[in-house]
Length: 166
Image (cartoon, rainbow, N blue to C red; front, side, top):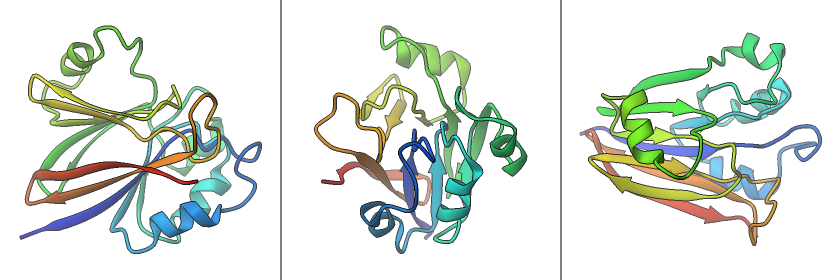
């Protein structure tokens, strides 16, 4: 049995919105096995902050520069998370037709993690789950900042939770 606890972040937008590790974010990262960041980190210092909690996989967002790319962020990423086929991308495009579009883009994925909109989303259809954790620091029109928490057990996504930070 392989149980994996994963924190999911996106759109942290340092240093404009992430000047240092927010305590509410730190509490969500404490004890996780892995952290996924779906882009718009904006400065590699954010990644340096979060990697102190657990290993990090990150993709490039439209506001990320050379320092985030140098940290190891590709445009897209496909991972095996304890047997769960997972893909990551920052911008999944328009909400209209998103699930079929992600299915075509990542035909082997069971889960696609994305960001960009700052709007939390957990949706599934056609054997694919798409998950956007929102933003912990730049909530825009949302009632609060958010992060995601995933629990994976032997290739099965047991839970996917959007956690409000305030």
